[in-house]
Length: 365
Image (cartoon, rainbow, N blue to C red; front, side, top):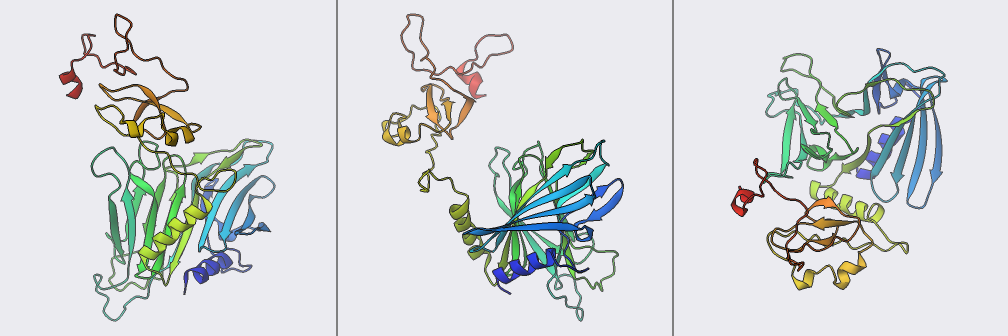
């Protein structure tokens, strides 16, 4: 099945008017486990040139709590984007909401070899992901984890730390069920998130007869009540379906999608050229990279930061830059005792425990 057929089949199963409807999200509400395939829902469709917008309203607590799902289905890319909102209209604080999973899918496993069920040759899936950024040499390194139909190797958890979405893992990952089949997933959240990919296994028997694997996406923990009139956004996501297509081809397809629909553009619809990153250390900016150059002036309307180069210059530099603090105005050049410009930057000073200014060697150490 090709990518578009997979995507369309997925959407049809989400909104099927029968008991075989596909599950999309889940939560605990007042201690009861609820899933999207059991809710009544209302749907409206708005067709545009490049995509179809659907708004689906699920009645979680009729007359009080609803989940409003904004879904965008693209015409020329096998991609859907989803953004869920919880809305409460009761007159008193609502019930307890726990373990809210914006995404809670059961997807088909590849066919299983039940004749020779050796786990090393049996059914498995592969999770592709990248390490996040902890400011060390191993940032962004691509990784992969294979999951098998046996306990001990059937579950993989990605959990961000420090309250940042890209500290431990980048918020993008892929799940491959074969060389030409799989799914890419992106996490739309500005804080900590958690993804669990697992093949549900109930015991240690080698003769598993499994048909599905589970993907869940959530915050690290949810436990709250909603007040009257509140509207709370939850984690958004995109699903990029890969069918009859290699991993490399699918990644390039997603790059084209991002340029076509999410790259910043000017009022005339032209792509904005990204600003140059001035990353320097212990040197002044060369003349060709001067902030007075035509290239810099053309992006002067973008956010500016105060760059810091020890022994160099302090000057507003176009973002993004290796910087210490944001500057909203032009700073005066540092001067010496005689009032002349020193040419050295002083956004901050490094001091020793005794209070004196640190020596160059102490700064380096």
